[in-house]
Length: 118
Length: 113
Image 1: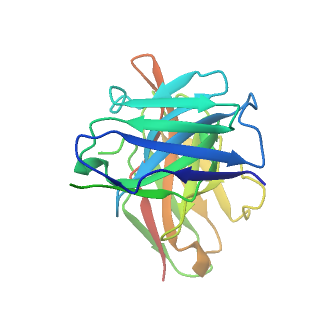
Image 2: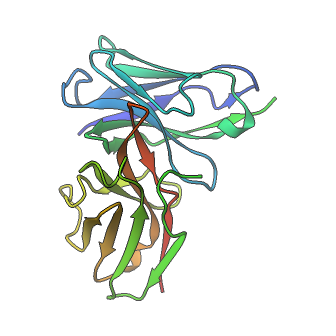
């Protein structure tokens, strides 16, 4: 059974860069049909799509976050990562790593809460 | 403000049917067969309930069905059960300024009375 697990800091200071990693187990990240990505959810609010990457490094990013995000993939470690620069309180959210096929998320990590505070 | 518009709440009694709408544009819902619906219980990750407008993943009860008319997609839950009480989100493939993305609705809280 495929499993995704996020890892990274739970607390980030304003203006700093968030770095999260998603480790995939039970399947290969190099499977050609899938994109691997990130979705976030501020406390008490709805879901926001951040972006995705495929095994060859092709990326798609949210237009509203494009200038601040980088998603990368490491096939040798079967994981992918998110970097989000210039963090503010508005970036406080639960961050989920995901697997997508045809713009549909069929697998989700458990989510990790990231709080932006000094 | 979410790209797709959903009613904030919906409700129904056990055994009844309820439908949740999701309105977009010809650049998302109306233009692509990639509309999905997710169920989210409090404190849990979302769960895929419908993909490609009408398809159900393995294990999702056939009480859940999806449809689309023009730029509006709908999720219908038939034979409501207590465990169906949750937040529901729609999403769609979208293209804006020649850039592909996924957009979500703001979510609908379904209450089973």
